[in-house]
Image 1: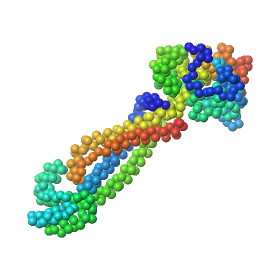
Image 2: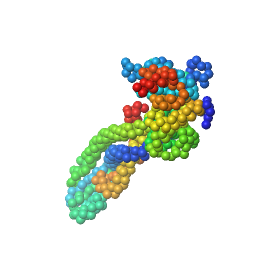
Image 3: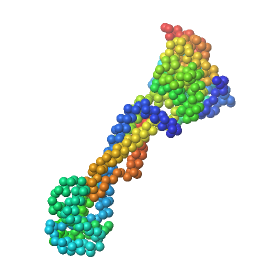
Image 4: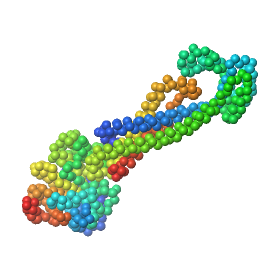
Length: 259
Length: 292
């Protein structure tokens, strides 16, 4: 496995912009500046979110259901666009990307969902390889990279199996393998443990931490309090559309959840 | 997106949704078969018209009991005309035998020979105008030995109007088939898109370009159009080969020409055009239902 900061990114589309940090490797990988998102004109789902995520960081995004966690991630992978403010990924304002450039943004991101979003009638290999096939990578290299990714998620040698025959936890591992196989700069995990039992949830969290250990930045959205308690990572708490650094505020939120 | 990848992905998708594509190709084959049949009819009508225009003909039917001297005198007159290239005297027996051979009907040979009028079959030189042909017919018709003269001008006129009508019908049919193919392919692709929403979503999340998403669907549309038109042309050819032996002699007896299949260049254009129309139908569907 490659060490921290030694990750190969074959399609480094994002170049340095006008940044305060002279050295691109020192600047935050993701910056949200006063981000607003409205789904209804009078109600802001996100209101003035400010956030900086450093390279190689692992951060939880948490908050009650409907707080805007998923919306925040959707803005980052440009499934939604910001209404006010800006989001800088590797120094580039992703709100200003043209629709033709969005695929290049997504090739630098890995996204994992609660419902896995894997294709049931494809094999494990096909589900993972698709992330490299879109890059027109040579087949031999695709095979090698997929094998490596499957090994990292604990599914070595199971590439030929149909994904429909896998358990929920294994299907999520396939989704994680697909997210990491192109070695993206940032992984966005949107409630990836939401459909899993507590033991499997912890396994998946550990998997993301192992990925983070190789230098990949991870944003892990969850409202599972036990996961937040189990680890000491940074916590960004979103409530009523506002983001706050919340490791110390976690207890208050937990009390509110219990009430 | 490399074409090879698009073809591989399309082939897999078509295998996975075989029934949908078989139904679509069957429907399109019927549409293309109609168009190919219309083109086949047009080809043969044009061939007949061309053949008739090239070989100016005149049949001088002799009166029953015409004297040999009168016929010889008539022949002498015709041979003296610069427009006449060849004269063949067909006796009643010869006419009966010719009719029996061309129609392959043995019953005809048992009929009395005097039912078939003797004639002088006159071949005119190329470029003889209809007016000049009418003048010759009028002059020849005054002879005592002549019962009637057939210049085939009326037939030719009717054939020409039939060909003109046929061309309009074939054009309208081509337009109808075009719309039909676009409609069927667009709907098949729409169903394919609906069935593969998850796959498309995953591709886009992984950073697939619009071209990568679109490629396999375009290939599927093109394959549907190409295969169905190729099958239609093959079916028509098979039917032509199977039926030609049966009807060719009748057509030859009636029209004086043998049936021909559509020209290879038209067949190739039909198949390639089928592929292009299929791809166009797919592109329209993608633009409408996928937004790529």
